Every structure is written in structure tokens, then in C-alpha cells.
Length: 69
Image (cartoon, rainbow, N blue to C red; front, side, top):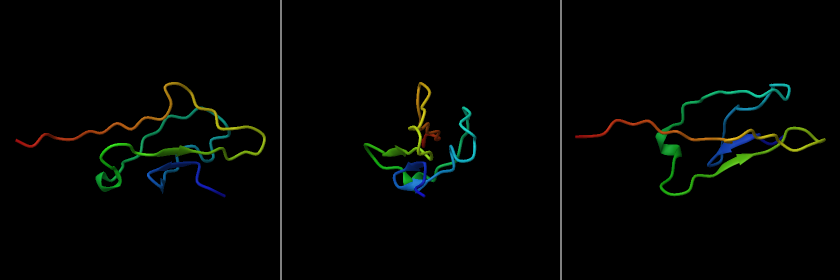
């Protein structure tokens, strides 16, 4: 089985095991995984009878950092 959610090729357990219920979650992302420019978020359905359901606004990547003086 393929991973349902990947960011730049790294799998995150975002949607697995939630019985098709909407779920909100957050996961720490190592800064070295992020790229300058486009970062690829890939979503796949884990069912055979329909595609993945994505509620608006969809997946998001929020980055928090401290400015260097």
C-alpha cells in the first residue's frame, strides 16, 4: 500500500485509520525536508471505491521561525 500523504517524498500519518471522518492534525516537519521554491504535497486515497475527500482550504504547510538579528 502506498502512503496516503507525503511531503517531498516523506510520509506523514495524516489520514490513516480515521474511518473517513474529517480530522485535523499537525506534525512537526524537519526544516531540512523543505525546499526553496515549490514543495510537493501528495495525497492518495486508501480506498478502492472513491477518491480522497479534501475539505477546503485543503492541506497547508505553515512554517514558524525566529528572525535572526
